[in-house]
Length: 212
Image (tube, rainbow, N blue to C red):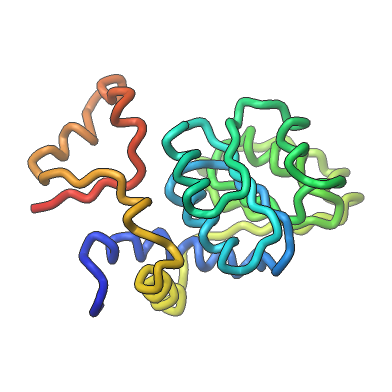
């Protein structure tokens, strides 16, 4: 697309997925949002929630560099996910967030989303657990809590167009999400055959642009 670098355009696909998921859960102006997960998807969700006029955006994650990026992108609070659920909820007025966006894809964070959402709230399970994995949940919390839960996957051509426009307009700033730019010859450093070879330094990156 015109006026969009190849590096920025490479973000269009994951952002389109986020655009589609955000439409499903429909964050509204003034609503308080909790985002679980500090990966690129969680950070993109910060941008989209801010664009929709969310009242308060809180992101929980485990990586200090990514938490700093969340604050730069507009999160009102970026906190370490290892704190108690009570600590998470202290960032919101009683009875808790209106919307929880789960962007991790683990059974424990699916269950955590159900724990911290307010009665009548909405949950987007964006992060996908492995097929066949069972997640034990409190059925009473869903029923008597009058919760709405959305699953989401992929996008339509409309969201692709929207993601490109948001990248052009700076709604989602690529310069923050693309943390590393390296020669294509270095790709092995980022995709080692042994995951234990990934250094602590490399775990700090967000999106990496491999340049030919």
